[in-house]
Length: 437
Image: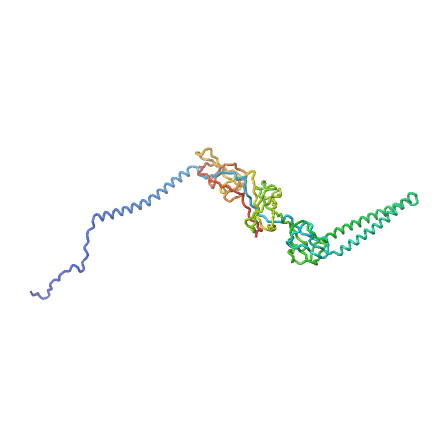
């Protein structure tokens, strides 16, 4: 079949070119599931926002109720410290006796018989001094004694003759008195010369230098030929174990170390417990795992006003000379307190311009509110977390453990669970000596 000019037959339509995919309508079940999920999320958000707000509201209500009533405080009892314990104090080992040995005569060192570290006994010869001038003085004094004895004998004979003549009235009374005075002068001169001889003889004994007590030689400041002056100075070089200060005067230094001692400063609170004979244990860092037994020899019997401590001497047996003077030591004293102090928490103290105070809790019945009152106290030693109360409290009284600025005298409070107060097992340890290395 023919077509007319300008007319084109229609093209056939293809469904797979430029066509959108078919859309299925949403089902009722799917819409229901989406609605339930949104509802669950909204409910969760509502719960998470409502519960904290409700808890805060309850806390606010509780705080308001608390503020309207008495404040709550935590108390702690004042408990008695233990009657016994160890007191550890620092000290420095010293020789029981120590002294410098000086010369009493001038001369030169003839011989020395002891060096540093030598153990000597009392009276043992340490050195000999050659003093020829002193020997000549002794000889001169001996001749003077002989001369005065001769003069005394002559005066005595003259006096006897003149007394016979005076009995016969052959001489005057004046002449007899002159002979008597001459005899008295001769007798006095004889006594003076004898005393001078004894003095020089005793001085000659000091040419032999001996040990005044048993001990160990800690310094030798002389050598052979050293010049010794009568004032005690020496001309020896400082090469024999002495120091510059020692070489200016002493010949030797001697220390008794079979028993040593140390001095400790005992606090005012422990001073009444110190008595002669109290056992002490001494330890030194240089000799670990060893304790030396000593005892309190004596105490000053009075407190130092500046430090409120009492000086106490502890004597220590030193077998084998293990302890050396100058060592730092720790002295452990085993004390028995006759009146132990009360212990309270350190946080219970209230420091004011009027002094240190505590808040004492007065409560007649556990079911009723308690009343607090400020009370001044006297504080003893500080243990860190606790302190000693020497006066102002009685055993078992309750104090506020952590007082704040809002608490006032006479205020009513609610008492919560009491706080346990630890009792120190031993008195506090004194700080190391500043001289310790």
